[in-house]
Image (cartoon, rainbow, N blue to C red; front, side):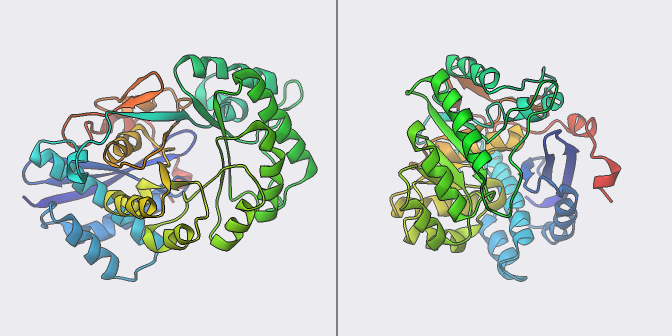
Amino acid sequence: MRITAIEPFVCDGGLREFGFVKVSTDAGITGWAETYDWHTSASLATALTVMGRRLVGEDPRRIELFNERTWYGGRPGVPERMKVIAAIDMALHDIKAQWLGVPVYELLGGKFRDRIPLYWSHFATYRAVWPEKLGVEPQSTYQEWAEGARDVVAQGYTVLKTNLIQEAGPGMRATLPTYRDGAIDRRTLDEAVNWIGTLRDVVGPGIGIAVDVQFDYRMGGVVQLARALEPFDLYWLEVESFDPDALLAARTQTRTRLCHGESLIRREQFRPFFQKHVTDIVMLETLANGITETRRIAEMAELYDVMVSPHNWMSPLGTMINAQVCAALPNVEILEIDMDDVPWKMDLLTHPFEIQDGQLIVSDRPGWGTAINEDVIAAHPLPASRLA
């Protein structure tokens, strides 16, 4: 079996750009993967086209050989190179699993679990800030947003994640806090307490509430925020940093659980964070690391007694990919899912995924268990201004 073509695709996903890569073979087997660069997907598509030429004519089943040759055959450490490797690595896993007639999880040691617990991500955020993208009526108060959590809990979700959205006046759009070069101000702290406090009052003590602030605050701001939210017993506070010592210092100053890792690639970047036992839960970006590397990072996490939770913010193909990874890894705690989204999102898949009682049912179909509907991609092109 030989690779005959590597074709990238991009489309406008409303809240972000969706990117995909299709790898075709002379055996009639096609592998799909999702690319990861939500603001500049067109540039990654170009990189995939250029680097993918080297693989045409190669055996798609030799995944490790491809990864090593591509990483060390150029200049290792360049993030764009890893994103290309990750995308093609995932597509090759899809091809190999289909060739064997098995789900991808069989290539990773077999099924460890049949169902994957999910947390409802970006709860209220999109509805508050970008209601037109979702086609819903705008809401503007903490109480209105929090009331929506009753429906989430009724569907079986036991954890939801939100952002620090702030109330707006009548007829005005809700906002996210103003970025202040990593500092946090008094208003943001007060509004965070108001929002999370209102949400906790609605869902009660038994539902986990996670808060995501990414790189918005440097460690001093992270400590202030984590302490301010301690009364609400967060499931986790999600933060990012490239300095394990700074993050460790923040962790020692609060009892709020920290989650970290979405922005890191390869074991080399994760290792110092594991060695210093910095965070309680590590978030893995499968789409930026690929299946092979994600598996290795998760195994390293297990050595340091850490649970993992894959980042899962992109298209539903990413969900199917992460489902296969989570099905095989023993130290997975929970998986992210975005249920508030553009209304046509699930049309991208030939076989949509299934959720029951807040849990994702692992597909037993070969490969990812689905493919991409190219007509749906074509129906949502990127604006010309983002292709130039």
